[in-house]
Length: 106
Image (cartoon, rainbow, N blue to C red; front, side, top):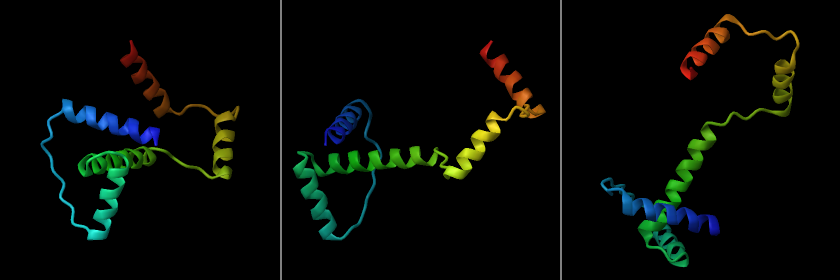
């Protein structure tokens, strides 16, 4: 509950700083709308505040999850074993990438 309140505070702050120039229209069954209205009321939010904070929070989570690679235990162990391999040597592409990175950092 505290996390949601903090998230809501961020959205409210952002709403006062940024220009609200976009709109999303959604059609849904009246029963779902009533559920949303009740949930917003429980949190002391308007329906718009509740929908924005909830949808933005979920959207950010989806985007974060999309950037994470999940491995099975077997695949993780194989990956770590390969990284720890004494015989592992960088190939030409990796060496070139390291040089480019070094030039960017200089």
